[in-house]
Image 1: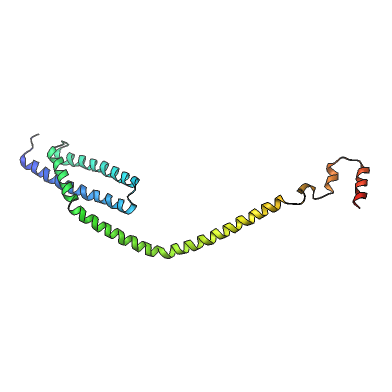
Image 2: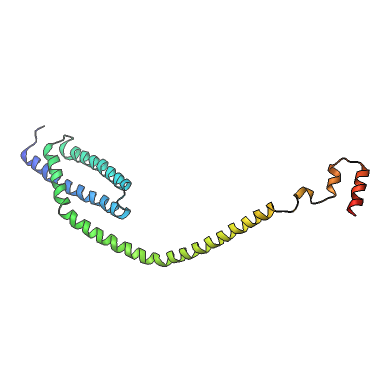
Amino acid sequence: MIVTLSEQTLIFLCSCLFGVLLSCYFDLFRVVRLICGNRKTVTLVCDLLFFLSGTLFTYLFFVRFCSGQIRIYGLIGELLGFLLCHFSVSALFMRLAVFIVRIVRRFLRLLARPWLALFRFFRKKFQKSRAARAEKQEKRKKNLENSLQPHRNVVYNLLKLYRKKSKKEDAVREKEGD
């Protein structure tokens, strides 16, 4: 298939525009990283999602505009558009995003301050009552260990049922106990 110079120019310009769109798409992932924090896992997930989806979008772009043929001027145009947008408009967009995220975080902290104070108050009360319960439980445990007689021997009449002794020995014990 023969591609004319005007078609090649149109594909190059469309690929430059597509590179700009990919740069804006990448900025969305940068904003997500800004919001979630710059943790390694968040960065890894965002980068993987961008590269996989960017590759898919580039493939679909070449299928649509180049009949599935990968043209070097298309890739160069895409790279050129991405870099131009990334170092110009994207830098301004990210400054604005950082400013907006800071304002939103300050506002949320301001809203959360009374709730955090209430949470701290109840946490202190709960920890005090928890410590008191633990102390009472320790006292109960010590009291059980220091009981005067084992539980089985508290009732003296039951001993007669468990021992097989003569009635004479029981009569002697009862007289001694009197």
